[in-house]
Image (tube, rainbow, N blue to C red; front, side):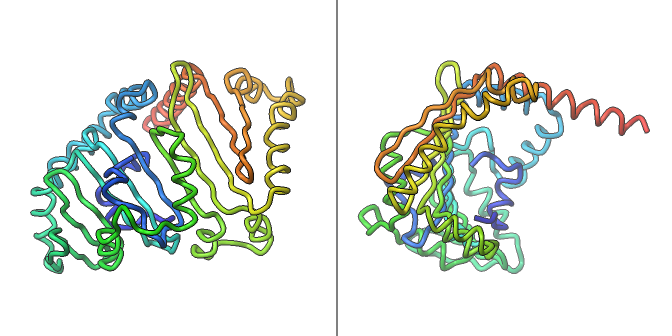
Length: 310
């Protein structure tokens, strides 16, 4: 699930990664991971307003965002949706971005590259570089891929195409969710394709099929919903028991660690199970989240001041 060059060019600040609507573009049958961001919902959320407010207080970030807009025509504050997916192979992926993009300006900048190959595929103007491809979908929407083949494949995919097992799992769980951010993967396949899996890890990963994480919020909490699909009912049963025992196990450590005690006062857990799929929902209070962010900012500020004074 590696970042790929052109995607990094457009999103240099690691913007949290639903984008171009899934009605228009489907993840490839070969996809083993996906990341989505409903940026409109993010900006309207309490969490989003708080984070963006802190970013606006940082002059260097504001300057970089303005430079990105001036140079490439990409306004991170106006992006509506991002939808990224890939097989899991190193530096291989595709992302659709909607809103906040001046496609004409971005295309004009791309055309300035001496080694760019400008072409057209299915009424989509494409710009192919040594590393990465850019496709212009509309006046404010683009698609970026690691290579031309991946981009063509993503544009050919239609709503009625046959879905792979991972995609079917995403759809089955996603119907009940309206996430700000979602992250999903076939854990074993992605780990194998990235070639970072150890023998002992493979034994564990073979017990599971897919994983999904959704992030949204309630009036008082940030909600993180995690789902693991097991290969056998027995594994799902063990996983359910482990999840249900977490609060009790953590409670046993009360008084041992002050920071852990503070976390437990501000976090709630709920466990559900549907067949071979086990889910755990974690609620983190907004007040706790915001306090911790403020503390980290203050800590980093103090470190910067000390370094500057040397």
